[in-house]
Image (cartoon, rainbow, N blue to C red; front, side):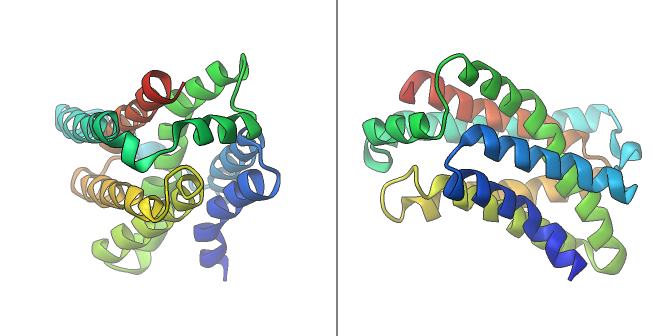
Length: 210
């Protein structure tokens, strides 16, 4: 029961913020509070996993660049099929993603999100699962539940069933970053890759949607 709560907690925070209260700001506050508080209260923040090596840097930059190009490049060419821009702008406005607040939200997404998500999933949760099972099990579980709350976020954004397609790269990213976590013994590569991947999302918002 405790493990299920840890796996579903982030998705529940996103659900309350976006689907119930319809606010990106509240969703972010609930979500990041969970990601930060749970490992701290459990005494499981993996400080030792912040190893900075040339290998971790290369793996992180390579994976991040790949996802940046896939996200921004793909949506740059195909957004007319996947996204109703006007409808999405209205949705973001309803969620509170407008005005001066959007700058802070963008900075949080770019600077806070990659660190807290990786500390939680490839750090805290991964280590707990790895103690009880194989690396494959830990990688698959963290990737699956990491993808779950992204699904809640993208379903209202994409047309029709494209929302389901849109989270496939998220799951793949989780698998790759989990594999790098296992191979390097560090979450540094995953954080670097995550930063560049999120930068692709920011570019989509700033140069296509906004």
